[in-house]
Every structure is written in C-alpha cells, then in structure tokens.
Image 1 (tube, rainbow, N blue to C red):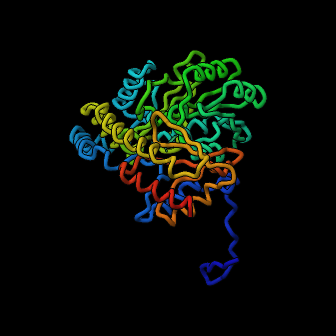
Image 2: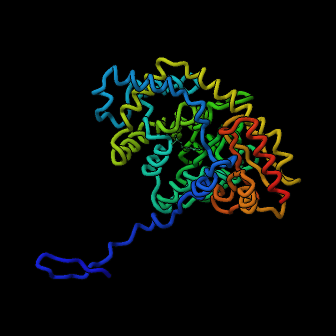
Length: 406
Ligand code: PMP
C-alpha cells in the first residue's frame, strides 16, 4: 500500500483501485498479433500476416480523393456527422451491393469504423452473457475475441473442406438454442474456403425454421481469382429478415481508412446505431467523404482487377511450391480467392514447433491452433500469399523446406 500526502502534511493510506471487469481478464491478446511482431524482423519472408499488399494501394487516387473532399467542403469534411454514415457513401455501398445481386437501399446500410466495428455493434445489440454463439471451426480470431468479451458461450459448428456442414448445424441449433451464427462463407479467414450455394441455401432454411440470427462477414468476396461468384447467404430465401451482412473497404481500397459497413434488417440496424452512438458517435467524416469521392470518380472495378491479377500470381506461386516445402504427407487446400491457404501437417508434427525453426531460417507463417474455437489442432497452419512477389514466395518456400528438414 502506498501513501498520499494531503494538504496540511497529513499522510493517509491509499487503497488500490477496484479490479478490472472479468471480461477484460478472461480474453487474451491475439497470439497472431504477437507472432506478427516476431515476423516483422527485417529479412523474414512472412506468410503470417493478413495484410493487403501496400504497393498495390492506389495512393495517388486516394490522395486526390481527400483533396477533393476538402475542396468540396472542408467545413463539412471536418465536422461531426450522422451515426449512420455519409449519405453519398451509404448510397455507393448500396449500389455496389445491389449490382452484386442483393437489392439494397442507402437506408439499409450503416457505415462503420472497419467491419470489425460492425461485429462489435451487432454483438452489443444481440448477445447477453451466457448466450450461445455458433462459429465455424476454425474461425476469425478477432471475432472470437469479440464474442468472448461479451461473455458469449462460443460453440464450434462441424466443418469440412467446404465449410459448415448443414446437418450438423441443424442438430446444434436444436440442442444449443444459439442467438446467432457467425460465418465468413467466402474465402474464409483462416482457411480460404468458400461455402457452396446449396449449403448457403440450407443454412438460410435452418435459420428461418429454427430461429437464428446470421452474421455474414464478407471482407474478401471481391478477391476472386477463378470460378464464379456465389450469391451471399443474405440473398437466400429465409435469410432476408435475419441476416446482417458485413462488408469492408480494407481489402479493396486500404485498411488504414478503417471503413466498413453493415446491411441489416431495420430493427437490428437501429439497435446497432444506438450501440455505435455509444461507441464513437460516427465514423470519421473526412474518410467517408474521401471514399465517396473516390468511388464516384475512380473505376474501383479496374483497381480490383489489378489487385486480383497480382494476388492470383502470388497464390499460384505459393501453391506451386508448397508441396516441396511442407513435410511429406501434409495436406492443403486451393482457395479460389481471398488471401489465405490452409494446411495440415502429418501425424506427429506440430505447427508451433515448426514456426520456431522456420523463424531461424527467415520465414514465418501462423500456426492454426488459436483459430480453432474450442479444440486446438496443433497440426494446422495458415499461409498468407498477398504481400510478397512470386520470386519472394519461392524463396520463402525454399527456406521453409530447409526448416522442415532441420
Ligand atoms: N472479418 C474478417 C473475417 C477479417 O479477416 C477481417 C480483417 N482481417 C475483418 C473482419 C476486419 O476487417 P476491417 O478492416 O474491415 O475491420
């Protein structure tokens, strides 16, 4: 105990401040972020991060968009604005969503500070401590943190190489009475896999029949390198009145903008707006207006096509060399888009141990264990292919092969 001097020189004992909330101590910091710190040492070829390639940012176009936002009305760009978001940006998001097959009005959309915030707002609106949240196995780590902080009981839905197994989902919903299913059905983080249309239809039917909210998180859907677009889960019969669809400009413009959105039925949207008022009043006005200018004056589809071409080559470089780099008997998938390949080492191997050796060889990846919501699989790993050229990827895989035989 310390002591505090009082006026008149009297010294009184000081009591420690009260404890943190249980939720603050029950959820750990992201092990992936800690691994990323190690992998950012110079010279390491890292397949660990989930970052877009910075050399592909349209820096000049975005700078011009900020200039245009200031020129149009600096006073507006620098002022407080509405919680739902700038009307022109909501309209632009609605138009893109409609063009991709889901009719959407500007009023259906709330602009958020990254799609991560949309997840937090929906969790605030829907989850009481002890409520069950269903997630894919494995799933996005920061979603697990978000549900954990809300005191949810997270239950893993059995998945195979194509994602959620609908029959298993129906059993779990009947047994656990969950509030919501959180899913990343397109080019999932961490696995890169995509849920086929027939399974989406089945998930929507189960949600309608058994009573369930659906949170469809789609930051990667525009990054398709082959195959055809699969309609959003939100577009399937049964899902209309119970799906929150989350989108993001992070992977198609730049994550530093921190601009995402949610599209949700009116009552849920209103609850999310109240939660956002309490969280940050509104998303940055200047960033929203710059993004709206950018969308109005730039061919975003052409920019995305450039990014896709580069990422497709990078994905192919990783897939070409991975077989020679991983131990014999390993398995991995071939995602049609997104940023990640998911692999599994053979019996008796441990991805965390391999990472330690890999780092001494100047290459890194993320062990898959933290992405599994309940039972960690020590043999899985995630490899991101976006931030290195094909030549660097080949060199990284040569180093990984060296770590495997070390
Ligand atoms: N959901 C998933 C599945 C993600 O992978 C990410 C980013 N890594 C996010 C949400 C958050 O994205 P944003 O930058 O839009 O907050």
